[in-house]
Length: 148
Figure 1 (cartoon, rainbow, N blue to C red):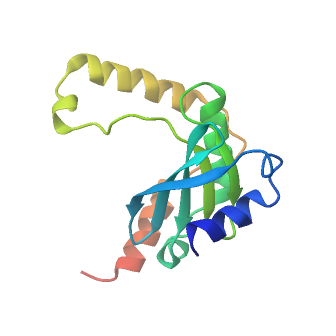
Figure 2: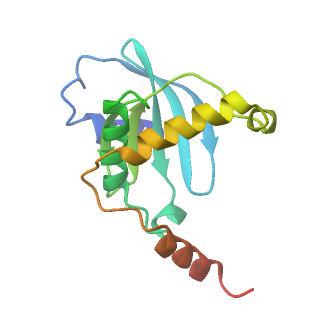
């Protein structure tokens, strides 16, 4: 599915669809599991993620992910999601500019303290979604990877 097709699927039913112009800016990541695109959505930037066929085999719960993103955004820890089509693996969320941490960031005590405080806030959230079962995910990924 192209980014334009995905946006039409997502925004065709969205209340702001006729109000906010959308313009693709650039690909952010074109990986085997998902393609992500930076775009202008009205007067702000957003990220469109399109799952690739390999993502479905991982058993990812994109509807639960959307609920978690809403909860994180509600307390100011992340950008709010805009629209989702979990069945098609489509997600549109607001973009927040920033940079990825580098190895050197991990060596700074104040950075680690900020991350620890952030993680405490995230883990204290009450989210109305199925709990994330990490052991089941690891087992599923191991089965997909096959024997050593």
